[in-house]
Length: 178
Image (cartoon, rainbow, N blue to C red):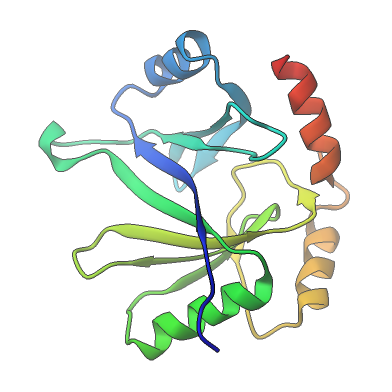
């Protein structure tokens, strides 16, 4: 199957001064703080100006070190419409010999991370119908059926107090942003 369309969704930016950047994006630019926590040992937050459309349009990730000339980009993400399309992207990357393809579940979306030939990190992902508090990173087994993957999300996160449908989260976040 030839991979289908994908739409750019969000950008993740590495930060030297995470609290200052968070204050700027929320206080000055007016972004809604969707979630905040730690991932892979560093602070990360997820921000949106349109919660009815996207949980996050930009994420800020702490832990940036070194020369400012190195660039702040963590990754660029592209949304696909379905798990079938995500699998097709994964298969296409594998067939092309792309190394270190990393299928991940975030509960609220399912992702395939990889690097382009110059080492830039990219992501294809599809949404799930659930809101799971972020950050959440788990391994994704794309050999499972769609239903098995969704059932695993509910089994793993359904008992968490923040767990809800993404539609419920969107309504609450839109109200908070208004």
